[in-house]
Image (tube, rainbow over all chains, first blue to last red; front, side, top):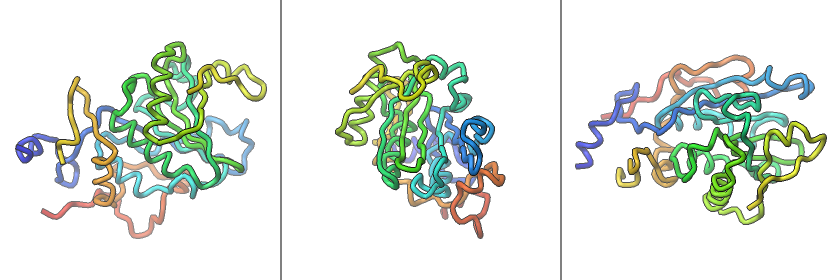
Length: 194
Length: 58
């Protein structure tokens, strides 16, 4: 039975059976070395690769640095294909993000487990998710899940709660609306917490 | 381990444990990757890597 269902699956470039994902996802890398972050934003962000099978995900993941090995200032994004990891993207424009912060060198497992939950479609409100970004900064590393519609409170709360469960993360986390972040001079207020 | 996946509600779901079983099977770079001076900083040791997905022996 296993054999017959496996043979019906599409085959990857190497001839091995591949496991298709629900969505195609694109990795983007932003590494504004030496430039002012303000000036550089958006101009240094590059799409790296789009994958749509489990195998292709690992072939990319296994060849790139883990977040803790990236330079300070770098952002690594994994977003659904066709959604750009920018506030200006029409699908992101009304959204927001849940963020988990951790110490330097601590984000690798959070990042991997978040990626696996996303590509494996473990979230009940997976359709509300745009993607995830890990940001390497001088004093901390941050992993953030971007969502589509910040006004949908039930969906945001569900995503935040499930994310914490998947990561076995106990502390409180906050959801910030992109619109609030744009307006705020310094630290925007959380719209939701869980 | 196909039992770890399902397509209930038409959705291709995979558990973390199932996805992790593939982690050490695949080492080659994906086909069609874009590489330039900025993005190459993201990649580990590029020397000696093929730009083709490794083929599993059958």
